[in-house]
Each structure stands twice: as structure tokens, then as C-alpha cells.
Length: 286
Image (tube, rainbow, N blue to C red; front, top):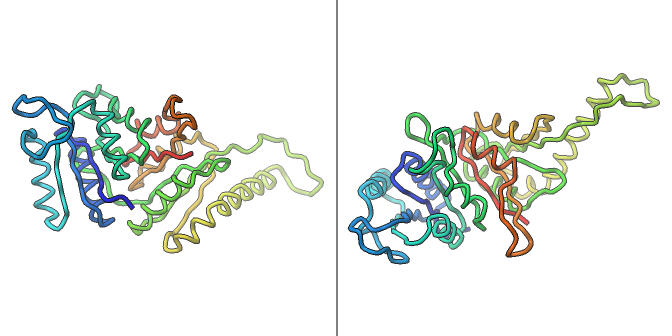
């Protein structure tokens, strides 16, 4: 378990929602909360690699004070870091094991739910990155299932471990969604079955296969209720739709085997980050 939940904060509504989500996560998991602001000092002095709470913008200090007042038992720190925001935030999250960001920063374009910093960090960080979008009332949703996107051919242990842990600590149902289209037919069989019966049997077999693949994780987390769903819809579309009633959507990002290889988000993760209605966790895996 990581020692702290790290959240990047710049004073925007999205980063305030991220800080609130991270504070709740820290309390729920028994960890510390570390607020990190990357930028120049308020008094114009040159930014040091890391400095204490002095010289932080008032908007950042306001968020810190609000969380401290609401959660007096939470161990909380707030620091300013120098450097490039994507790299500084990724490094801070990797040291602790979990990074939380707002899904759009101060420089975001209208209509884009994820800014360039969030996309870069989600594509490069070697720790799970949760991106939180502020709702119209300025908060972030907390109720609902934990939804995880599953690729039945490449089940990522890191992704499933994160999803089950989140469901367990929330007391939530884990909903595993896999996109897999069945053959279009026509189906030929010696048995006296019509095409609909054959298709239903194939769909049931795919569902059983997914349930069997998750059985070992259910054994590790027996308190977690697991629901499985096979859908013919594209994975991104299915997960975005599932996010409407979710507290968190978890997607994987494959990390390149070579250190010098290009890191990038897959099409599914990219679509979910831009369009999900709930916070989204991007979890790197081999």
C-alpha cells in the first residue's frame, strides 16, 4: 500500500474536485494526503525542486484549509514543486503509488474534458492515475459500482488488483465489462437448435469464460460482489455508458517493454477519459 495519496492542484474547479476525491480516498484507505502545486512561487522567486506551503497561491491554500477543516483527523501536507507539471506530477505520484488529477486544468480547451497535462501523465506515469471531473455543483460523484474494463485475452493483474481493492474499500459491487463480438453466423449444427438458441448459448459460454477468469480474484476478495457483462458494443462506448452509474471506472494502459519505447494511451482509455461521467483510473500494466 502506498504511504500517501498525491493530488495535483492548481486552483481550478477540476483540481478542487480532485482534491476532495483524493481526501476521501486517503481517509478510506488510511493514507496521508499530499497536495502538490507545480509552478512559480507566488512572490515571483525561482521555484525550488520542492518547497513548503509558503509562496503558494491563495486558491491552493484555500483548498488545503477547506479539507483540513472538513477532515481534521486527516494527515495533510501541501507543497510547491518546480519543473514541468507533467513530469513533476508523475514523479510525485510514482514515489507514493497513486496520483489524482482534475480532468481539465486552467489551460483546457472548451469541450475537452482532459487537458494536455492529464493526458500526458496518464500516458506516462508508472503508477495508477485517477482523473476527476467536477460536476455542475462543483463536486465529484462518490456513489455507485466500480466498473473495470476487461480484455479477456490479456487480463492485467495490476488493473484487476486495483479495481478489486477499490470495490472492497468502498463496499461497492465490481462490474467487469468486456467487449467481444460473437461470430455473425449463420451457425451450422447437428442439434435441432435455431439460430437464436445457438447465439444465446455462445453468449452464455463467453460469460462463463469471463466469470472463470475472475474467479481467482473473487477468492482473494470474497467480500466483493462481482457482476460480469459481455457486450457487442465497442469497449469505449460501453464503459462510458457504464460510467453514468459508477463511482469509478478503471481502465488499463499497457506499458512498453523497452524503456525508450513510446508511451501512449490506447483508444479505449482515451475515449473513456474524455467522455466518462465518473472519475477514471488509468492503471499501467505489463
